Amino acid sequence: MNDYVRHLSLSVVIPVYNEEENIRPLVERLKSPLAIFPGGGEIIFVDDGSTDATLRELRRAQEDNPSIRVLHFRRNLARRRPSWRASTTRGAKLW
Image 1: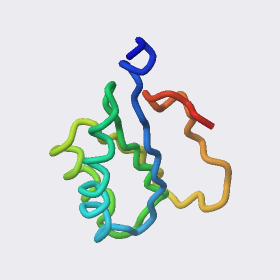
Image 2 (image 1 turned 90 degrees about the vertical axis):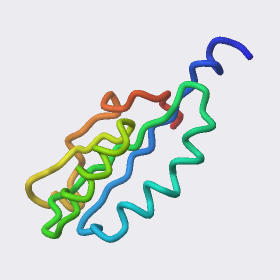
Image 3 (image 1 turned 90 degrees about the horizontal axis):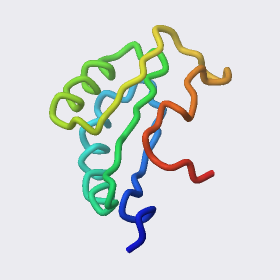
Image 4 (image 1 turned 135 degrees about the vertical axis):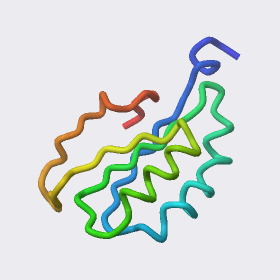
């Protein structure tokens, strides 16, 4: 295995809006696939101004899993260009 593959990691970026009941199941489903990357993986949730308990659920998930990162917008930006950048991710850029 070469050095690049040995250190390969994956960043999964997931936009969410009022998804409080879906956060835990989604995190559970992603644990196993992320574990196969030699360099590890991370999940970046982008909360687009949710008005329910989505942010609370994201913070709880983050407490249990240090590979979870949360970006939170106070208001819904909907279809506007996101203000976060790919440089926010730790994994390789594959697009």
